[in-house]
Image 1 (cartoon, rainbow, N blue to C red):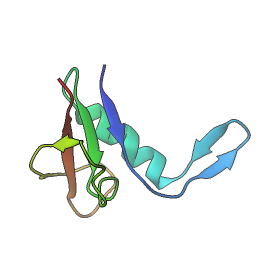
Image 2: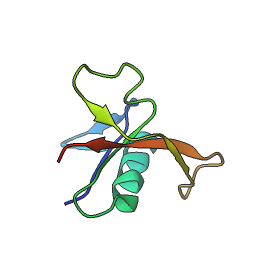
Image 3: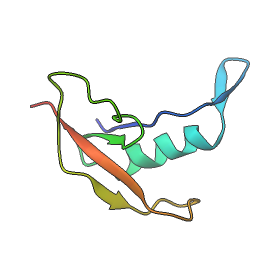
Length: 76
């Protein structure tokens, strides 16, 4: 299992969601290791109490001109 989370607006078309943010979330999930939950910096701007996160790291995702910071949720 690999999970990628990104917070942004998306357009709903029928039962599907579309937009750049949907693609970013999918690409974040694709670079996660097995059993890892990766979140974008935007998603954890207001860190929920009790949630432990790794140090941020910059990743390069296809389709983005700038690196994106992601953090890993410590859940084990």
